[in-house]
Image (cartoon, rainbow, N blue to C red; front, side):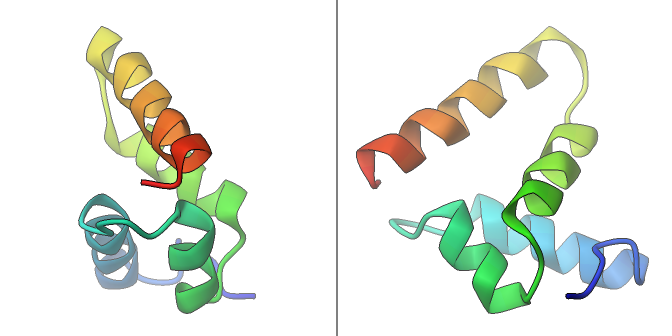
Length: 68
C-alpha cells in the first residue's frame, strides 16, 4: 500500500477526499486511495490542532458508526 507521506500533494488530496467524502466511510476512501484506514485517520488527526481536533476526530468516528 502507498504511504500518505509519499508526496505532499498526495497527502493534501487524500485529506481533501476524506473531508469531502459525503456518505462514504473513511474505510471506503482509504480503499480508493489504496492506503490503510489507520494511516488516513492518523493524517487527519495530524492535520488538526488544538482541543477542537479531538472533537473533530470524534465526529469522524461517530459518522462512520452511523454510516453517514
